[in-house]
Length: 439
Image (tube, rainbow, N blue to C red; front, side, top):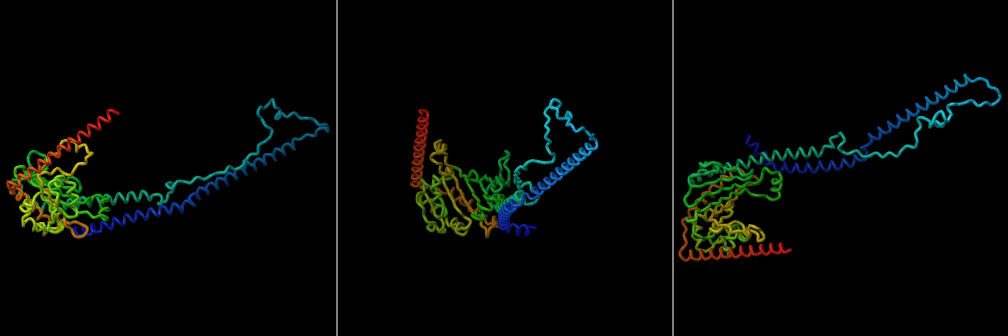
């Protein structure tokens, strides 16, 4: 059963493309049929109109015939009742012609059964939805087919994401439990829970670990493709996306010295350096990863060369080099506040955010072809061990006297710059409010 299910899932992109082509084909047929049917759609109604006219003509003919027969019979009765009168012309009193006897009576007889000029009838076009053929239900058929495909894709994608997250949990559970006292606490009760992988959305799973010397906790976020969303699946055919795992370690303040270090892909290093405040201020220069025994596709941003040499040991660089397709980035910072806020944002003018001491790892799930398998999630186990090793390495690193003085000086400069910037933004807001009130 599993082999059949996997075989069908490999053809999911093909089935989706067939559905899209079917929708286009049926739409084209609908437009063509409507153009052809507009010529002779109302033949049935024209026939019914002709039949009504024939029945009306027959009725009028019958009325005329009965009228003629009635006139003939009246003439015969008059001839039988005629009495010879003298040659003198006598006027017989006809009370049917007495105007005082009947009011509003006209002598002129209106012939029955004879109608006047026929009106110019215009036959209106009957809407398409009144036809009784299947051609009028193309929209409903397409809607039902689309809903069916969306529902099937939703359940299939949701189940696959669940299996991938569960596979990662099973393969890394032993390593995590040996290094953290609590693995998988969802925070729903006062007592710590164990082994709970929280499902945030259909494509996002999280795991919280705590209970280790040197760090307050570790958050693992498994960010999978939106396989449950049919629109996203179609977009992945045009622009492929990868499944990723993000690990954020919150270090204890007393267990980590003040420094900033980052290993970033060469393609996105410039963009990330501009977006993150700590990298912009403390690490203006980029160094090639080859100087630190790393692949040439990475660059190193370090506050000082001393920090990079002491943190990037041979064991760390070896793991990164051997898993170049899995490892994406690493940021170690004691001044992490997230992405920069726009200058016109209200939050930017508020009180500055307190920086955190964190280690942020980003990993890509390796996969061959178009689909990620459960076996691919198992390959991330060396990255989990790398995270644990980096926690210990950062906790043991201590600045020299000169390095500590330089690091503290830079942080005082950053704090002063942020205070000046915040003050200037508040002044600008007040000035704008005064202008509005004066107007």
